[in-house]
Amino acid sequence: MYARRITTWLTALLMAGGLAACGGGSDGDSGSGSSSGSGGTSSSSSSSSSSGGLAAGPAYTVATHYNWGGSYFPMGLARDASGNFYVAMGAMGQGPGIDKLPVSGGSNALVAAGVLKGPTSVALEPLSGRLTVVDETGRSIWSVSTTGSTMLLAGDGNSGTSDGVGTAARFVAPRGLVYDSKGNAFITDAGARTIRKLDTSTTTSTFAGSGAEGSTDGTGKAASFNVPSGITVDAQDNLYVADYKNNAVRKITPAGVVTTYASGIDRPLALTMAPDGRLFVTSGGRVVMVPAGGGSASIIAGSATTGALVNGAGQAARFGADSLGIYFDATTGKVYVADSYNAALRVLTPPAS
Image (tube, rainbow, N blue to C red; front, side):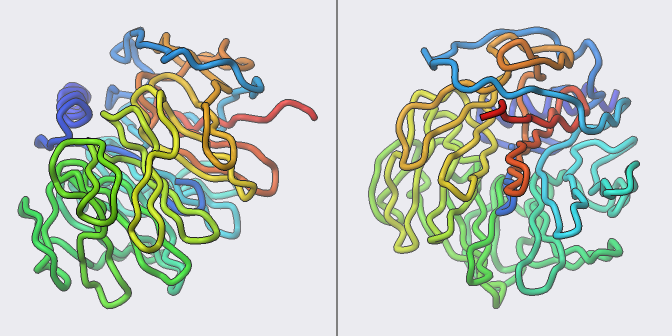
């Protein structure tokens, strides 16, 4: 029953940019990174979507790093300096929560099921070392300690677009999350079609997006988006947004200038940037790579055919319908993907040079 509710919720969320009663959504943390809540069952039935004419890129070898199984639904990913993963869970047994994957192995609930309504993204706060969590279903932003205690940062749980301090701010469907070098958090509001800024004084403001459905480039509120989802940042504090229904990645400078960075990417959800400027993006059942500086994306793993978990090289691998979290390991060059529908954390290893 819980799995069925998650599936219904996610379908409505991704297609309409809206919000339903239960579950969680996508990506987005700066270190990284947007379906059956049962994870890995036949309810992630095989489907196909357009490849968008993307060429094959270098074939990354896909393996399973961790498999939760059962009623788990991994989404956004963060990783600390010790190598521990923190995972936003749309389902964690009987409800949403935050799971921790220690380097030593296994998993344990950092924030127990039921405390949060539907977390989608998690990121490390650069100034405090705590975690920040976007609770999309709860329309709120939380701070979480390494022991699991929670503190509300922004949002009052009601739907809206108001800017303000703390709980005076409102969100429609907050989804992706990333921090810049100054400690400001940037949050994609998929339902409001805007990018929100949460500064170090917990003041929320609208950084970019008019709120209207569209793909217009421009500065600040002159620009438009259509279901902005995952978000990441580069060393110069430029933001990159997975603009889901525009099939594009948008770039936003620190001055708020929005441009289209890459297009023709089918349903981009989560994205992460390597230090050399390459972007890795989840796109339906694929992971694609955008070269540094923008341009044409290429497929490095997976295919338009989705379904049960299959490991392998390049397009022989299979993912669930949408992968809602991604993280790039700058030390090894490996890419970690939250295969949400298959309740697994996948690891992609680049081919030998």
